[in-house]
Image 1 (cartoon, one colour):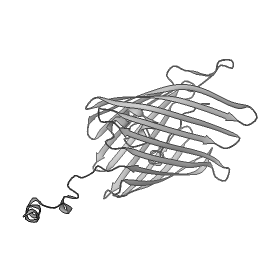
Image 2 (cartoon, rainbow, N blue to C red):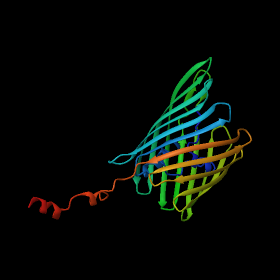
Image 3 (tube, rainbow, N blue to C red):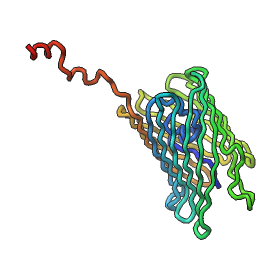
Image 4 (cartoon, one colour):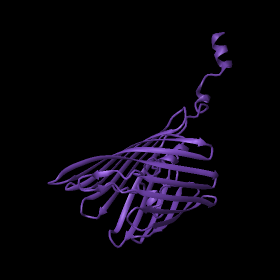
Length: 275
């Protein structure tokens, strides 16, 4: 119970890499990366886990940079169906400690509901560090449930503790390669790798692979001038089979104070009217 899942179709398309990328889903995957967001962003992610079985993985994220520094984030994840489901609500804050490094933290409320057995509520938190020593390179570290908090002390069941280390590098302009390793306290290390190429700032092509279990991914994204991006990804593994993933992200554009300047009356025409 309380498993941490990857959110965002872009992240899925790049081999389930998530912690060293900057976008709206940073407030869910690695809060520290959210400190580099410049405009408020919103995102919705959806994936049917077992096609035709009504099992869904759904996330919504909101990231709001604040004037005095830092970024506030709100995220929600739902996994399951009516007989069994897990919900995760997170409230995060991230801030740049220097131009090249940031720190983020999130408080999590988790709920597990099993039909016939009721529901269980519990809390934990997560921490992240994000660094950009140069513009083309991002290095990230994230830990989920660092204090190994319990789901139920009577049974000894604990929320999983997960450590993640990731890197994303812009090898050439608009071509990114990303790698990540995940390790919890029970299972063996997981390796993830992926790449993304953006053509003419309009279309993004993605591919990746992950281990344990071996998973292959492909993805595509479309960027619109209005600040909207649509993302689709496809993954395949032996346990879950073929799985589609869908996402939409909206980023508020910065207002241009000169945009309506030509519609304003000039001082010359105003003086003529006064005369």
